[in-house]
Image 1 (cartoon, helix red, strand yellow):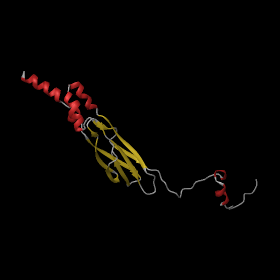
Image 2 (cartoon, rainbow, N blue to C red; image 1 turned 90 degrees about the vertical axis):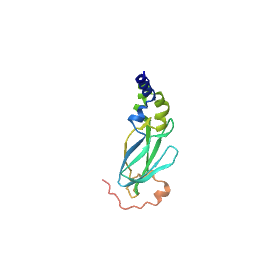
Image 3 (cartoon, one colour; image 1 turned 180 degrees about the horizontal axis):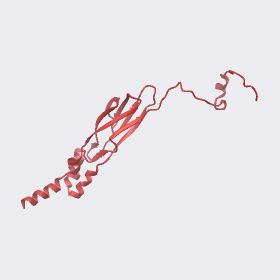
Image 4 (tube, rainbow, N blue to C red; image 1 turned 30 degrees about the vertical axis):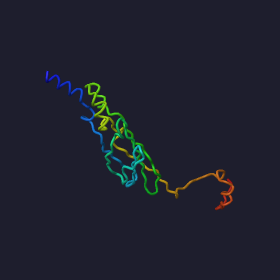
Length: 162
């Protein structure tokens, strides 16, 4: 009887994700060019990290009880356009193990409270920033220019007819 009660207690109190998973994950962040700056903000717009990449940042997957976290990573480097990438969470597969093992308390209290019921879609983020160099050559047709712009054009040479 005692062992049956103990087995029942374990099955009811078990919390799969908290035991087999985690609530804080290391996220590997890289970019091209390197080094670049990355600023990470959370769901509430609070800055949680500001530094250079490549780096590894430990981030919480849960925002609060039964609410998954969401981050925005903004990359920047001199001469390049800023780029923002979302980092999203999903329900951890181990959380559903509570259904199989009968862990009602784990499913409704422990895993949501510890944040272990969520995990990130990806554990690494890598991006390439686009060059914003203003000295790039841009070729346009005269027809694309305004009359004001056309009036500033200078003739450099004359083409010979074929």
